[in-house]
Length: 209
Image (cartoon, rainbow, N blue to C red; front, side):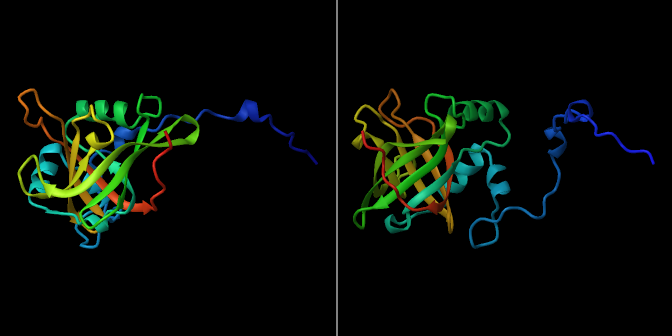
């Protein structure tokens, strides 16, 4: 009876072809990743927003309360119709080899009914996670439109920084934010829209200096 000789894996293995991600564009996805409790939003829909759409939605939202923002939150910075913006944002904010690292999101802890603290989280090669870029949080009026917002003030821990983030609530576990820096005329620059979802896990605390 004939026997089959063992084949050499090195001789029979074939290289897997690179996946054609362009083929996924425009495909309907009825089983999206739900976020929030209203049933209106999914992760896919949030990432499909443009900067202009996100900022317009943010303007109509109410401020999130101080006690609600407690723990770690995942961060996103969508602009669905602007591939140049997406590439630049990804290279700067979602790149383990960049100066800042891969942005995982933000963390918050309330200290009083109207004040708190927070930090940003970044992942670097090898799985190292850094918790820095601290901010003081407070309830206040927006520097963009004057309406109530949850304010993230980086200048309290970083006196040379003029960055201010302002959060409002879209749905349970979904928070829209805009970031601005001081402009040359003393006002605020063009808002940058971002999204936080969570909390994903509990407050840990910033890295010790």
